[in-house]
Amino acid sequence: MKLTIIGSGPGGYVAALEAARMGAQVTVIEEQEVGGTCLNLGCIPTKALIASVEALQKARRLDEFGIEGRGEIRPNLAKIIERKNKVVSIQIRGIRTLFKSWGITLVEGRGVLQSSDKIEVRKKDGQSDIIFTDKIIIATGSRPAQLPLLPVDGDKILSSDHAVALKTIPGSMVIIGAGVIGCEFACIFRELGTEVSMIEILPRALSTEDHEISELLERELKKKKIRLLTGVKVTRVESLDNGVLVTIDSGAEVVAEKLLVSIGRALNSENLGIEALGIHKSSRGEILVDDRMETNIAGVYAIGDVTGGPLLAHVASKQGIVAARNACGIDAKMGYSVVPAGIFTSPEIGSVGLREHEAAERGINVKIGRFQFRTLGKAHVIGETTGMVKIIADAGTDKVLGMHIIGPHASDLIHEGALALQAGLTASAVADMIHAHPTLAEAIMEAAADANGMAIHVMKQ
Image 1 (spheres, rainbow, N blue to C red):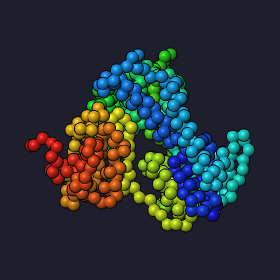
Image 2: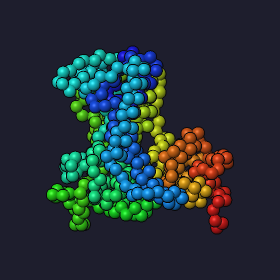
Image 3: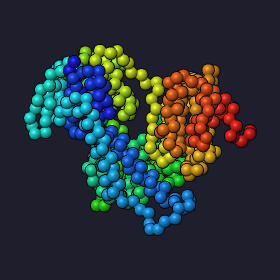
Image 4: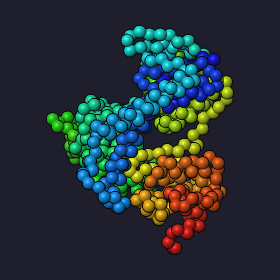
């Protein structure tokens, strides 16, 4: 069976490997570089930058750990970017090596559907090739969204693509949007020394997260002296000689050297030839698929950001596996009931399952367990005591419905919550499991116990 995949991001390249494992003859068409946005401009580059600023943050606190040193601690952005690029290049080589190992053919160019079994590959030199195939997976991803009011120029007005490749540290920056990407970049640039202001049209930062978690993050942003304006709308952006002037609906103005537009993602579903094939799209542009990741055209699948839904690399990878299996004749279905997510702010955030307000909206009677990291010995040992674990359990059955963490290593710890949801565990079962001491995971055990009023490392009421 011949399978052709358009796009080699975390959805496309994983689908290719899975299909090759099952014996398919796989061709991957990629217009830019293997790894997609996640590897080249998103997940990995930003986390490499975050790793550098976390090292900087720790270095500035060495005296707290009894370490004496000489000289000024300061960031060198050129070296930070150099390290980021090295990390990315290692991962790129890894994917290309995997492709060779599994006999996957990589074709460089833009894939355009001609029919359900024919793809034109338009190359950068103006030439084109035709690939005939049995099955197709579309994995073309997304790009930073733009508004006419905020024309990104890569100089004064930036997208996240530009922010990971700046050559100098801005003295000041305005970030439009206090979602995941905006908050991560706010923490990065503030630690590097940039004066940061954030403007968000919604009432709070990270509006999709549990209210207690986003409120705690807002307090931490304030401690970092990041200016956060919520519930306001940008009405005008004006270019100045040395920066930008942003006006909000109250008439207030914010001036900064750089403006970062972080208002979400636009889906790469245009100019692929899908309209001519009659593949269904929504008004937003997402390619519509069923739970097998198949479009309305038999044998044509779509995965990842271009299908809408959770715009997460790991979701795209799972969708890629599901699509590849179905393309190879093995029945598989995609489910979204347990999707852990990490937000790499300072402090980190991890979440899975229902938020408290979502449970209330659904009329589910719940009980809540909480535990603060500042109570843990391990948190004090590593000098990171800010944050909490929050567990949401069904009031009647005690089943864990959601877990939300803000604090050190939250993106790693959240997978205990994901496993609890996947296995249908109760809060009591999580609390009864012996957790190693001293570890940060003890906070999960204590929060689970607290859901049933059984926590003992809390003050007696």
